[in-house]
Length: 421
Image (cartoon, rainbow, N blue to C red; front, side, top):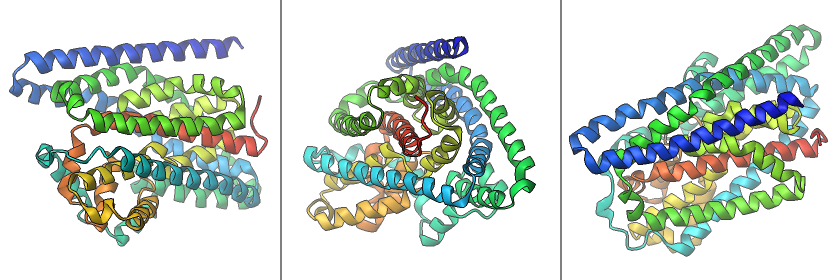
């Protein structure tokens, strides 16, 4: 009990430090943006962002071994293929349902609020969009399949291809389960690896305030607070959508957990704060594993469900895809999309497929919007309209991804009777 209290105090202290770092970063960025020369700002912003890069890369080095070890051990501990199929089936029902709701909600809200109508398309960040356009030139069914199925475990790990790691880990875990006692030494070794990596997490997370300060200083110094005014309606419309999505998720969470939902939210305050300030849901995956087990979720359910969730259940990102694509369509007055429900539904379903496994891809949501939107006539240069404020939207959708995956893990644990009270 004393150890748990000490952990909670440390977690709350880290959250406080992160919030302080965020405010300090905004202030420092504003002072530099308003007082320094454009040449200095252009040189300074990428350099201060290196603090955030260091933190994120430290987290990324942990992701691959943690996903592999936790998922394999989780499958092995489930005991048999029947249990794996049952738990996996329940998780996929949640993932698909949540994804469809998120995509549909984004589509409905952007259609109602119409933030793209009347937008000056000359504000598009054309130069910044060129980099993203280059990433989608080779997008095809062949490339999509290659992105899903690994050619090499080492290659998937080195590139942090989470979906490829999930595919390999499932096959490896299932094979390990079928060989019985011969695989026990491997299971024990991977279980020990999980604990070692989670210990590394506690060290890396101490760098979170420094990373947050660098990220906020860099983006405010470069863009200034004025960018928030320019896109105020777009940002507020999107965050209104996130609030509605949150209410739906929390309503379902309350139906499952009752008053324990408030305990869960308290547990998630630290991971969600980090996700918000770093604009990366991937950054808190290791921390989320710890918090879900402390909340009472069975470790084998956590080990199995969370890695799957990071490939199939990114609720905030899913909502943003339909929101951003329809915003661009409205700005360019593409009536073949904005005035046709059938086209919108088709685009929604394509997003369901093309968005899988995007957690480890930088600016993943925008890349998917580019690749998928092109199939429906959305101009590639249109992505420049949302590029300038993508970081601010990414903060909200990353935090939402964390909440969605936490609730999915709790739900599966509850359905399996593996949630401690």
